[in-house]
Image 1 (tube, helix red, strand yellow):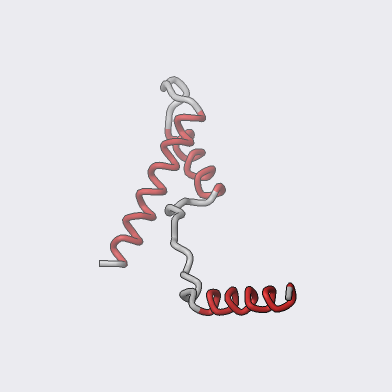
Image 2: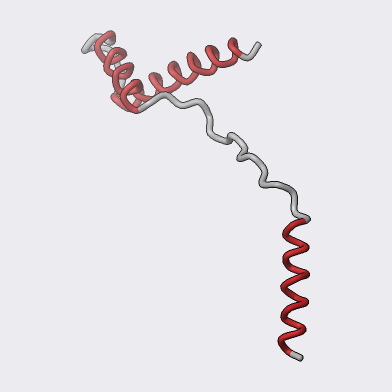
Length: 82
């Protein structure tokens, strides 16, 4: 009797699984991001362009580099999708 009820449960599970929709494609959630090397290179360029007497820090340079590169990538990809 136990075997019979288990067998019916397996049938129900198999039927329910077969009724599930096919696996959805993963949603692209990542934003456009420049690589570490690109940001480092651009931050160094910003540092070099700033005179030694000008205020600023390596963190400011890094954040500015990230911002600039991200905007460039987004504009480039946005223009391609238009």
